[in-house]
Image 1 (cartoon, rainbow, N blue to C red):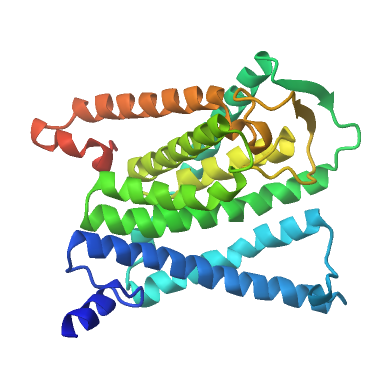
Image 2: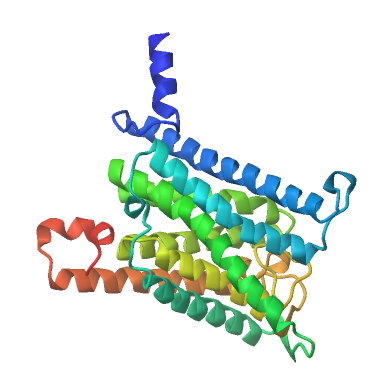
Length: 323
């Protein structure tokens, strides 16, 4: 019985214990991930419900705002979830925000934005050249103010996922297990919530959706470790989603609902080139672009690090980075 009690105490997300077998510690961090996620979502959903009631709507009777407004409310609500995650981090893990990756080097956010813009534009343009996406032109009645609102909304949406995966999970596991394990667990937890939106497509498209989601997660992890903060990953995440969804008007991770966009771009049929209903994030073309990006990142990081590092620390290239 004492062993069971000790096991429960170890895996509880409400303490900052680290002295335990690695497998048990990984379970603990995974539970902490879901504790932060569910706590934030419960509070966020509650606030959305209160806003409906305050505006004279009863969501319990199906009285809801339009889909675009609901999406904006949900995304802006992630700001509250971020705050809850930080409170849990400081209150129960008893760590500083810099240990979460929330450093003062917010300029790294711009680096992530630039990386995200390049990767998503290159991927989409390459798919257009295959003929699997048609570029129609500009939407004549594009609501620029609404597009701008979505940009700010995606700042919070992208940051919340990064606070959990590259903040809570990656930062805890890289310090108490190893970087490969930390990146693998972080990636698995990042991919899992996206799976329900993948399963409606053809099997080959699902395979590339899984591969691409894992690849972009690894790039997020690389940026976090490389800059010793989560800001670059947050910036890339935000811009990738925003450009894909509100600039190009393409499906975002299987979300093919109503949106507001600047350009009118439409998939031609359903195939592995355009990613079907999941969007170009399930495209074989995007897989090539992301793979090349990851290889280039690893190559130049290793080369730069080797310029001023000794052989005895060469095995920690990814974890240390070059400053």
